[in-house]
Length: 161
Image (cartoon, rainbow, N blue to C red; front, side, top):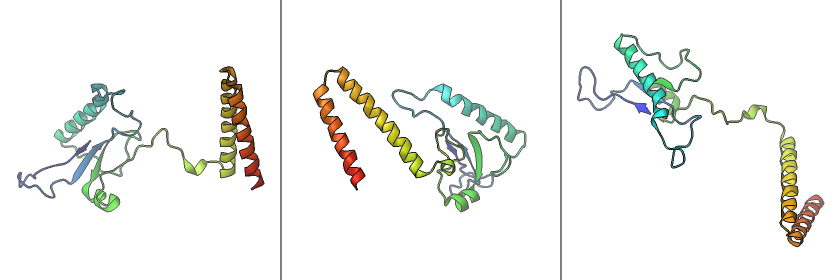
């Protein structure tokens, strides 16, 4: 959710260059994909409403919102960015992300590629063993044998290269 201003105190009808601060509430990071199986409901909007109301109270009391860059709660979904920062740092893009996705992987700490490849091969080999067992349990002995032979031939060909 993005919030902009229209008009200024001097010119309420002004329609350009009015917004000096853009408030952003991140409903993307660490949230479900909303749709038929997970409909967007009031429970997802309640935390935003609480942040918004608290910000309105601070502004009404004369407290100026903290500008971007000052110390803030690390997991806050609600932030204010200056128009200048968006222009200079984001090249006017409003695709602003600051929360870290819990599912993201820190690529700086990944194992070496050969270790990753060995792990992938081990997992694939185990998956093939389980599929072979399933085919045998289903009575597809002949088909399981054909697939095993194809796999062995492919591995032998790969080792020759």
